[in-house]
Image 1 (cartoon, rainbow, N blue to C red):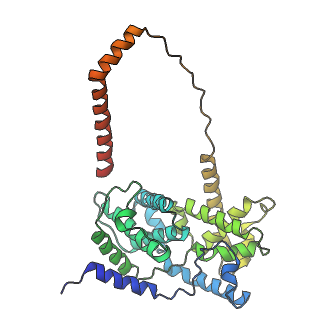
Image 2 (image 1 turned 90 degrees about the horizontal axis):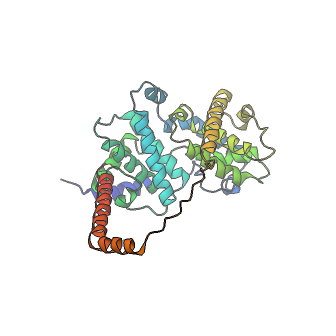
Image 3 (image 1 turned 45 degrees about the vertical axis):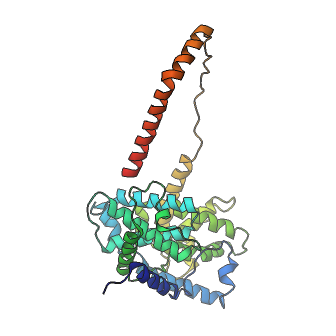
Length: 336
């Protein structure tokens, strides 16, 4: 007996809503007190964060996943292209940073367990759409339709039923564990550790979130756990605040049990290099001065001849060229 894909998917969505997420900090709010007020005591909070650090290894790819990119057994450029597309869609629809990170997390965990067919690149695009769709359904109050989600330079457009089948495959490979532990599970806590007064907590969280997303394409961060990435992002954000540039990464090891100083320093140094490079790229370019050319005077008889000829032959020709050019560009965009 066949089962309707849409009905089956709705049942799966209902199951997702029943997942127990009480132990995961979503990191959606920029206020430190939003997560802390509901917890009984700071000791309980630190124990919870230490528990996240202990469990985070279950929500990341295996330890050899990054090395497979280094040995070219996995295509790093294909992953970078997929993550770049996810970031474009995130900006287009103003998705939360957590949604974007979850989508990339699903993609990496899937690639760590399954090998996609080596074809024209459409399997990777389909996987990217499915992962972003699942992440949006987990975190966003309003989720675009599957066809509307395929924007911002998508090379291939897939039917909704094809995407749903891919979503079910991703769910199966991930063992339905979508409520992952991410850096956004930690940044509120680490921001409060660095700024107990709360004067700069919101700024630290906001800037750290930007730093995490700006570096998410870099495969080198796959060598670090979410908690380590969160610490490094908070420290990089603190360095941009006056009088806080003296905060050292080795001091962050004492923020919570389970943090490793060497990992924090390595991740922080890598992130600092990339943040500096990104800031340099954003600097305004100095444009060369342009020479203004004065249009030469033309006699009225030449103007009358040119206007009469253009009305009979030149204008339609130009319109045809413009239309053809636009048609060619549009065709290339839809076929690539």
